[in-house]
Amino acid sequence: METGVRRFFERYEQVFRSGLRGDLDMNEAASLYASDFIAATPARVVGGKNDEQLKQVMAKGYERYRAMGMKDMRLRRLRISTIDRHHCVAHAAWTATYAREDQQDTAIDFEVHYFVQQLNSEPKVFGWVSGDEQAVLRKHGII
Image (cartoon, rainbow, N blue to C red; front, side, top):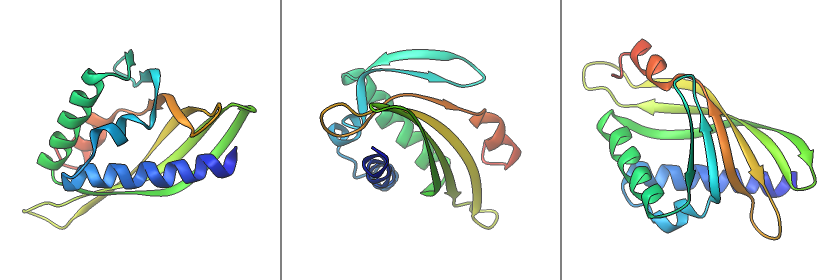
């Protein structure tokens, strides 16, 4: 399972970077997620479905990241905690780089903890937990 999850996150990184370039295939992006998922931040916990609305939300999210100046996203480290033969938590350490007109590029390190399920084929994200993105962006002067 671990090898498959590592390959999955390499693909996840590439899909995210395509979104930042504005050339993302939304079907490919949606294929990374299970049919249903949960997301938790300090602000709230939400559930959703992998449907057309998810694709619209993702497209708007990438537009927002580009508008804030995000130009790159790199996976620095991935630690996997196995739950059972079909599930794990992937602790992903990311670095987001923002281009700033009035200053040098800003690199921000953060972690997201993904709940991953692998049944018969590719792993799928069915949930994630992240920190307070808005607070971190404010701290670094991005928003």
